[in-house]
Image 1: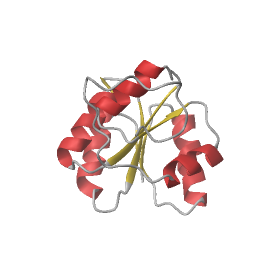
Image 2: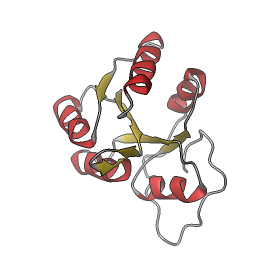
Image 3: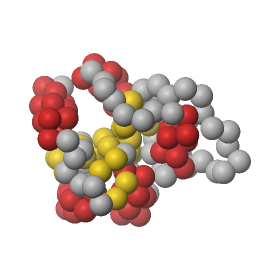
Image 4: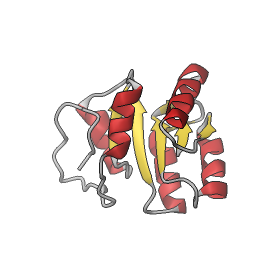
Length: 138
């Protein structure tokens, strides 16, 4: 699992919690580092939890870059902003899930266990989803 967040407290909380659930966790604090870590460890990384807001770039752009490295990478985006438009944008970028902040480790664990469709790419004709939940985007 790769966790990408620019907030050190969030990163430490999620890393420690996921380790308690048995995940091997890699971390990154920005988009550049996320792409470097994923490139180096893609065979070991099953999913990516990616913050949507970070310095230098957006989580949406990082999601696109990760999908350029591996089109089947499963990215779950996370943000304090959880409007239907944000969730729809995450889907368009190739994300397979969205979880609004703040979240508990139990909610995160549940979102990570959900089976996602790897064809989470949406077309512009798709209607915007309803209110966001920690469910898959499909």
